[in-house]
Amino acid sequence: MPGLYLHIPYCKQACHYCNFHFSTTLHNREGMIEAIVQEMKLRRAALPSVPLASVYLGGGTPSLLTHEELNRIFSTIYELFSISEDAEITLEANPDDLNLEAIRHLKDTPVNRLSIGIQSFSEEDLRFMNRAHNAIEARTSIEYVQDAGFENLTIDLIYGTPTTTDRQWARNMEIALEYDIPHISCYALTVEPRTALAHFVKKGKVPSPDEDQAVRQFEQLMDIMELEGFEHYEISNFARPGWHARHNSSYWRGKPYLGIGPAAHSFDGDRTRSWNVPNNARYMSGINLWAEDPSKVPPDLIEEEVLTDDQRYNEYVMTALRTIWGLDLEHLRQMGRRYANHFTARADVFLDSGHLLCEGENYRLTNAGKLLADRIAVDLFV
Image (cartoon, rainbow, N blue to C red):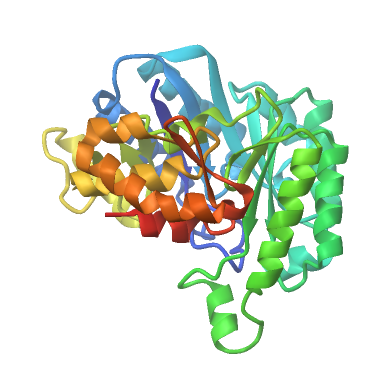
């Protein structure tokens, strides 16, 4: 079943590590909401005429939207698309936005899953990242949404920062577990181009991330999550049984999804990927032009790529090995026997080294392999 993603391109302030498309200038939000609504109407036919399994509002910071803005978006979604009765409907939120009034409004929307960008329960970590919330808000936001009846929660945590000692990282996980949150996403600090963090590292103002520290803290993470009964179902994602993120799992398993909003990506489930222009003004003007003449898509609004057979193989290897479901050799044979032969020939070295595990015709990374996931995937590429 397909999914729908909406990119809300606004944030209160720029986190030092973030390279997602967003703007801290919040003017003309009305025009952006109108453009998002119009794009949904213009691209409805891009998805199969079957009920949506998931709707995901990401960004940016969707929790900045007003109750009226969210209602406008959801009324359009339900007008245009058939939504599965048990659809997962996620909204990304920052802790500082989750006051009691905002949560009360969220309970009146179709949102049934919240993804809260905690990142850390340490004041020092949050200052280093330039997060808009503080450590107290990190905790109270979880308490508020749980008290309001939101059970399906996930939080983001970041490890490997210069301020995150092993002890603090263990404490972050301990606090998260105290709240009995069913899903946790954890990411190593990465220096992305054109971010404040990249500038600080280049100028010597902060040290580059310590790879040994990141490996050590990832191992801590895997050990604790396994001990607590979480399933490590994707490299960065841990869930109690039955609480996997349905929307993101569809990405990793090659299901079709439609991305709406500036910089949003789409996939037809087969060969075609596309992405919207990552510029708010150009996005809005492009959508307005398209709405005036639906037969003509402005040339600089949406870029498209048709994957070659080799690219499809490489993408499948990269995504499948990141998940608990692993890589299926029969799937590779359906792509072409040469791909199955190439994979098995290259995989032997990683089976021998203990980085890959093979059960029947299913290949998965071991915990040791998860530490080297990207490097292993590249070695298996054609």
